[in-house]
Length: 530
Image (cartoon, rainbow, N blue to C red; front, side):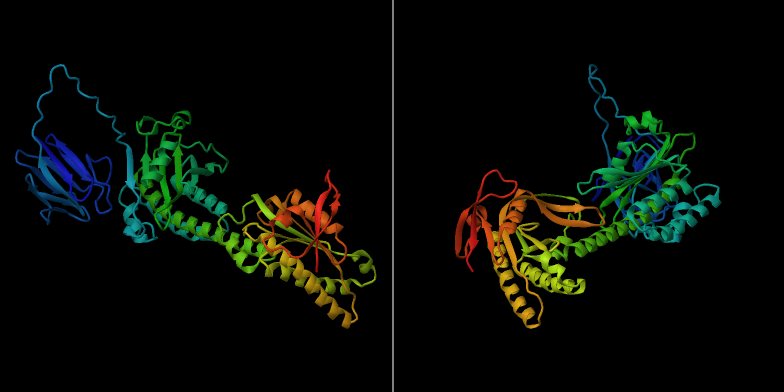
């Protein structure tokens, strides 16, 4: 006798050979393992007859049906539609195969997984309330499997504490530590490891600790954690070394006896990582442990996703607080919204650099009180920075009484040099207006010199995660500073490279080549006619 169950609208297919019984259910230990949330772990029992199959429902939650009629027991003949939960099959009779030629060698059957290994589909968010904290549903998942009900009640209590405790974590690392602590409290594991996925979906170890809270080997069985993440399934194996599907060296070398693993699935179905626990002793995990881990991982995933979101918000706020001091508000918002905005490091960019410096500042400061000097500089810097921002530049820094600004990083435009040129001329005009007002008020006046250059520099964030400074570094920066130092009061000096990059140059006057500090040859220099 040989019959076949072929899925209708699904990919399930089962060969029914021999009288049976053949068991249908969600657990992979069944001969017909139907991994679907509407199918019970032990759903139905099938026995083959000469004319078809006899079916007996095993007390499933969602029922067994033949031609759409729910049955407790019944029979089905070839061509019949048989449904378990909401998974539909068609029963077919298979003709006996012709005997193989005598010389033929029967193919070797593929190795079967250990009967002690369970691979269970993770329910979608909201199904049965497992991932949304429905205590009644979790209780159904956990209770009634084993005799010690007190242990199950303890697990439910811990789930409640998990939901409360994980919300108190102030950062992702602290959250991962708490997840590991709760796992140890409940599952009596020898080791707990948490791996998180990067943007490309690769797993990276974050936490690996033993029962004493000390660091443990992070070399977890890749065959197990990879299957959990890729297939979005929870895995229990109580004899990992003998399970032919998990053949990683770490299983053998570390003498992993029993292991539990569940993916951490985000709200949009994207795996955030995986939670893995194992034992090296004789203690074996059971199905109630697996059920708990599924519920636990759902709660942990929600907390982790919220924690990661909070850290992104914190990073953006840090970026804005740093960048709004240096960039125009529009540009600061663009940078802050970038996921890489607050990372250390940078890249090479072609940048126009402006330096301006007050002439005779030291002598002037000796004649003024500190308060008067601070007020004067505040008014001066405010107007100079507005000139930079008005023409789309980036304020790099203040260096004493000097202003450094640049165009081209982090976002460059074709007319960076023209805008830097207009900003320099605008700064001179604004200073003339400031001096006229200060003179009427009986206050000192200021004179500045400006240097402009363009070239390839390193541009990026320098500092720490808590304090970042966006700046440009390189020889073109040094040349701009030297030109500023060589400029007389009221002069704007530009390099040959800068002049050649101008689309609409102002009136210029070529000066004799200048010898600048740090340069072996004199450089062509131009003065802007005002």
